[in-house]
Length: 432
Image: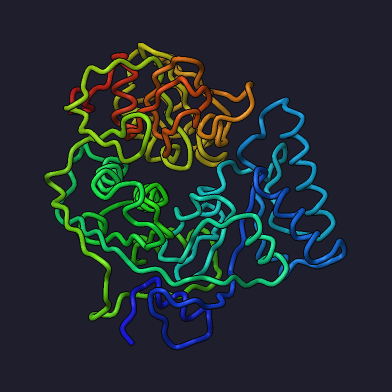
């Protein structure tokens, strides 16, 4: 039976020789991840259904990373952290990255990769829709609800319908002013926010093969914005180099069969790609930067699991170096590791962090921060009537705070260029 990468991984974890799209199977879990927003309700359902004294299926396979509402005085958010701590202590869970400790990491999706939890051929379930980020490593990774997570906590298994696979091939050399964020905004704009509903979005082609792991993560991160079940990219030497530098754990690389069947195959010529934005209030409301150039913005935000990785800040620094921002600009590293790199990596005698500070940007602590709005004291949260250009992944009304604000999604290049002018700006104006 010919199969795609996703189908092969699911068949392997179901203990069967083959699967077909639409088939329902029991799948064994390699990693279950949760955080401070969904962890407490997951724990509550687990105790309700399995009993107060029930044990988790495998403490080594449960990863808990508080990251959303952590740097706040909100009593409800603080209580969520207490619930996580109590559960971790009760079950002696070793993989807890607690805020306020040396082990604290930051945004769960980037922390998972840094800590070696994203491995080819594995199955990762997480109580966050952007768990699909990890598909960049050639694994099946998808977001699930609290009830499903509670079931996994007790059994280590989940009932899964095998998705069809949509293939997106980007061939050629990607222009130096175009980033993965531009490409995924183009794709989502082309197929719509429901264009990949409960399907795998697989990315391939020479353009993808030339990408860094962080850029591949950006592609897979946003497949959920097209309704995708998971994103996936075939593991290669770039993948293995990243993974082996972070873990000795075993993994298995799967590849598409030559005669594997796809729902659709979509081709993009890399040289035709342009800087893109998603206009308010939907990730599929696409426009090229050229088409909306000079639209006013009142703040700029660079951060989140989508746009807060080290390479995202390197890109932003290329544009912000020796410049001054014209609007409020926020820099939020995704993780503590990235924060350290920003403080130690230098360009012409200045650290990246110094470049941002000298440009007049405000620096936040590693976390999700304003991406999901959050309590009123959340750093960088968008206020009433703001027009924000952001490297985040969603721009629904109220997503980053006030429902009357507007959010444009764009690449770090475009956000940085727009921060300098106070209007949506083509990054080519500032790139040599």
